[in-house]
Length: 255
Image (cartoon, rainbow, N blue to C red):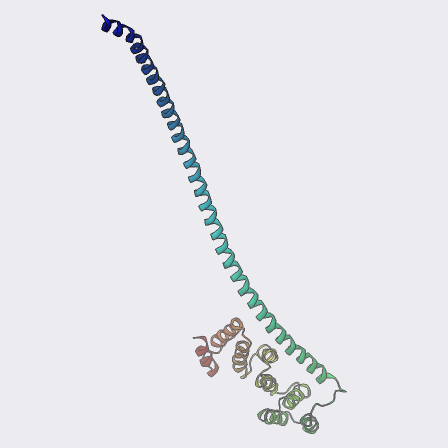
């Protein structure tokens, strides 16, 4: 009897205990569902964040590539600018040198035309006195060649110029003009030589000195670095005087 009473008394506790366990299970199941939902949400957000991060990384990589490419182009540009600047400086220096030579020529030309100009050396005085004595065109040419052979460039030009001015109808004018140009070439005054050779080429078109004038003018252009005009003169010489000794020399230059 006592046992039955005890079992009956314990029954409510067992029922309540069973109900509590079920309630806990329900709570736990709800928590699990919430955790799963939150986990899925976190995964989704993480995937989105990873995608955003990847996009940012890709954009950074693209920008870095653009920066490197721009830096490379800038280096090339500055390199070209530096080279062009160097070439410009070289050209300016060359132009300055040529202008100085032209100024020397203009000053000399003025002195030669001025009747009151004083001679610069004993050679000039001697040359002037001799030129005033010689009255024959052939003698003037010979005198000029002798002075040229002794490197008396200025006095030689005085003799050649005297022939050109005193005997305007002489058949030696082309030779006098050619050797006048030669005096400047021998003095390495190539700019002036080019101008004087041009007189032979343009004025004395039937002269036997013309092939030599074309050749020496081309060489003068070479000396000052003007290869375009040098090649053009060599080509003209070969085309117009193909059998001349100068043409043979020009062909070697053109190879």
